[in-house]
Length: 275
Image (cartoon, rainbow, N blue to C red; front, side, top):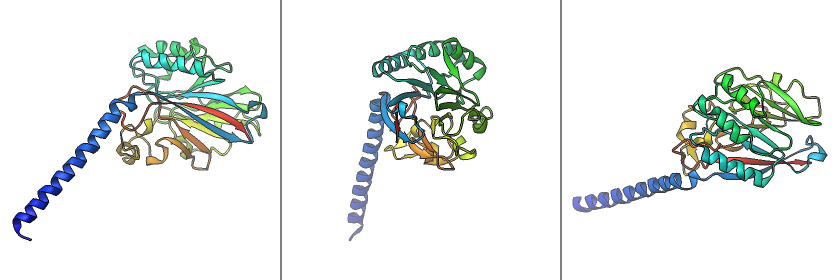
């Protein structure tokens, strides 16, 4: 093979590589500009013998990482959740960047009808000194290393944010009696690797935004670099486990926090099943 043939093949290979690269970039840009701006309502179920028999089919809406920049998206979410009808509303923190917007955010969230109430925790972007009074003013109960019985044998707990304060799972679930179904809210899923969760049945978390920017939805540099979570891809999205085997569901959140790439904003709807 002469030099000209070698050069020709090299040019062809370079063109093919460039074309593939451009196509990959284009796919990600289009995904970010379209699907990654549309909220998906993800229906999941969770089965446990500790779920009270009378609560079989109980529906929970989990909304987290709203990062509100405008009210339009949140108003649409409130309307859709009212259409879908849920029994309980749970809020996972990181509501807004500006404390001045907390009141309006809570007002919109308070419009979601939930017969058994609305409960929430703080995230790393929240200032609890402003957040909790705003929640209480709109009949949303804050949980801060504390818990409450929502129904007989159904205990709901929530912890402080890992980056800002001192989450304490044992304190949060201290009021739960043996045999009760225990659901824990922890904005940052890393808490589940650092503390004992063996007395918890289910943990709901957010924080990671589904990796925020992903390569075809499979890999996130932010997670691999341990910037968002100390446990890499473990808590990118969906089902995972705590350090001692407790099921953890990590919601991608609904925030208008762009760019989102292969990380569609998500509201999670959980149906409890009595085994």
